[in-house]
Length: 295
Image (cartoon, rainbow, N blue to C red; front, side, top):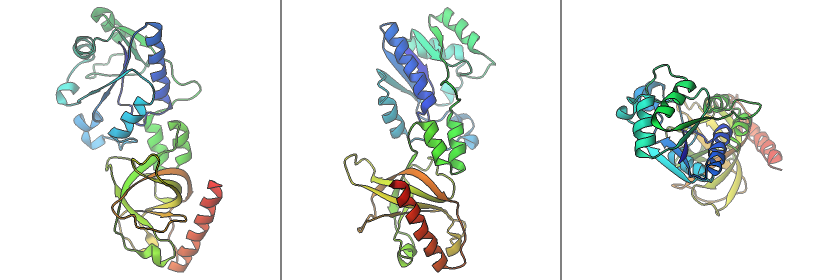
């Protein structure tokens, strides 16, 4: 069994490069490829106050990992007992004893187990003792891709950079709930959304061009539209964050349905307008810009 280990949030281009090396190494050794991941972000256990927002839900991550074509995926429950294991204990008890791993593929700066100041050479030494080959993986050529860099891009509203690092556009899923119905009065009826996965990262406030589908409906309808994330300052929404999407050429009832938004581009930052009429005029400009981007 040839494996690598990580949380794999986002399953981004860097993860994909690592996973391909695991598959290549498994083919070279005529062995099975294995990905080991965790059921929750490790920081949510030992430092919950610093746990990051997620780029993928558990279901999304599993689907993306399966799509890599790896032979097996093993999800470890990460708890305080797991967090207390040293790297040596983890390699001996979990990798070798529990899973029968013969080779571990990791990057030079990858760390696992309870921190004891180890480096790649230490993992190699543990492996020789335990019976696991530790294989050095190379980074994606030309750039460093990380989940942290993707989060930073999304927090700035740079969905284009996030898509470049992910290798696909960023998506976010929410349930349609009742709102204030003010969008309809402005000529832009909207579906008001609340997060289906509260821990998933919501991009920065502003207006975006989005493609919209019903969640889990692969062959269902796809709409183009625009999305606003923010406090609706023109309408005195207070501190509450509203997530509203207007679908182009759609007339129907979406209440109670779950929608997945695929971010195509950011149109502008959140703005305050002097009147509802000025806001409506800007929304019309936003729509024209979004439609031109989709064309």
